[in-house]
Length: 394
Length: 214
Image 1 (cartoon, chains in turn brown, green):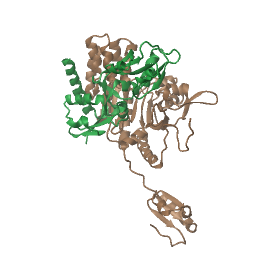
Image 2 (cartoon, rainbow over the protein chains, first blue to last red):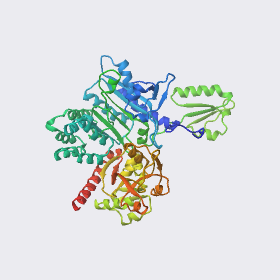
Image 3 (cartoon, one colour):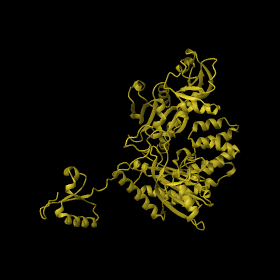
Image 4 (cartoon, chains in turn purple, brown):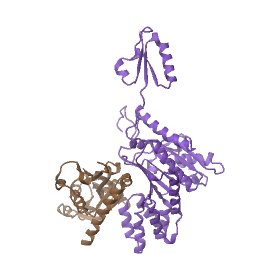
């Protein structure tokens, strides 16, 4: 490896400079407050976890994990998501009598770069997990909360696509007969390869009716009416459970009054094995990647030793900022430049102003070489220099 | 322009066929469209913006969302493995990926060398054949490699096979058939679904007519 320059950072690592930090905090606060308002409690987990536990349980691909060894030789990972660590804590500590648990987090997660740059390897996620409630109400709640939180962050133009992995599995199993064949067809959906899907279906040894059912499946995208069409693809109403859940979800979100941003997309398969029911992604104008995603993951908590359901979502703060575009800048601080003679007066003034909620920077004038340049970054500037009474304000 | 759709088009061979297809689908493209040397062409009447890219780069633009749609060869899709929707087989620019080399030669037993523009596809293919090979990435004139002793075999696209014949090479294995695909950014696919669905429908009916004519 060539020698590193002092300014270099590992691939995909980024600095957050003050302006961006401010913007991030605004978004984090807006969304975090909404989560708290809905009764979710924030928590933190360590940045490092064991590869064997959280690392393998997480939904993130193995090649995207940052791995390292501890002094005992255990493989560690930098947490690639927050869901798995929270499932670990919930299963081992928090879940009592399987009462529903509402948890929230905002934290950096780490995913190694796959190819070229242009993507951060560390980024902040803010999200919630609703554990031990297996009702569709829980799924509805997290979706409604997500919509509400995004609105609180002033995002207007966004859309949520909702799918159900149970429907895909049921339909494919009905038509294809075996788990294995269903799985290989599902893989095309996961890879977003509709051309490959159609070719695969055409090559299958099926009746033309069944082939048509599989081809029509790709059209299951749109509003509530999609559910009726989906129903017609199922044999004798078998496997309606997933569709009933989606119908119920729709009604719940309607009751929340948040259905406007919701669309169904039954071809949505965000992961090959992680989700177990309703799943969703959220998209915003002007950002090429989903700004968040979520769904029901009933098998994850089980990996940590408790059998119970869970659902949740995670939003990516960096992409959300991109979607929001220009944010309103923070008010510049008030600056008091003082000399030794009037130091005490300056401190008193600063204390008073801060008491009124004004941000005040105190600066010894002897520490500044170019005063004009220095004061440019502040809003109001007060000079307390020389003998008392001779100070001027500008 | 509101609800503008940005389409990444591959420069060169595929471009004209793709433009032709869009015209058949009823989109009004200006006559000088194909002759322009501009990299960004706005067609205001249709609310389209075309960006002209290297074929290999089309999926990159689409994945990052700077283009909503793109037209890309399956060869490029296999090589790049980008996270985009592959919606439609446009049935244009038909060719295939093949393994070729000098006639009557065998691959080196110890370290067979393969020259190609498609290192990922080639590596995957030989691995699936149970063979470990060494890949040499070239950017063009791949046929040179076996002629001057750089590699045992090449993996490249073949359309008529003429280039191979003229350089005294023969095809050993056919890897996969290639056509151009309509690809879509996953976010655009949802946020601009009405316009994209319409485009897909119009292109689909053009292709179905094409099938009937044949």
